[in-house]
Length: 252
Image (tube, rainbow, N blue to C red; front, side, top):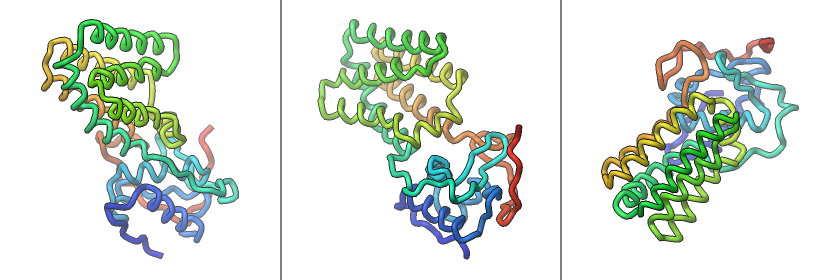
């Protein structure tokens, strides 16, 4: 059965449900490698990030397995969870944060007091301490973004920033992070946070806006890096679709 085009307004859940249906109908057998994300996006008429979110949802549900450096493979349906996962898409969440927090950074550059800027530096220092001790620096990261939001003195915006950041704990975000968050990616993020602090300390709203937008854009791009090797940044190698393929052994 051919893949149906999905309208841009649809969310990752509809993409995941269609892919699940193809697997359940035997279009892709157990062990088959799914087509590259770029090919799926073209066939479905959606963006690659939306496909990425759908595939991560299917992985959380136990229907597919992401093998970094190889591709995405179908697992036995019996292993899949009965109920589909439904949560905010992590990549859409990052884009929403980019739109909101870029303006908050610009506002902070114009209004933050010296003590508040010192608090931002402390949050970045906490991130570095967490990384140095071998932990994911989410405490310092959360503190950094919430302190910028607090500078606007608007409880609604503070709540929105808090809720969007805390989406990191939903199953899709955590699964995506397990594949792409590394010591190197966090080192880059800390450098980006530092650039935001410098712009705010220099009382440069435009520079602060751009620095925050760049940070969150880079975060988005890090989560959409290629699953398979030897591809250009932001793209995938041309792997042939492999429906009805015999089970491939897991790498040791």
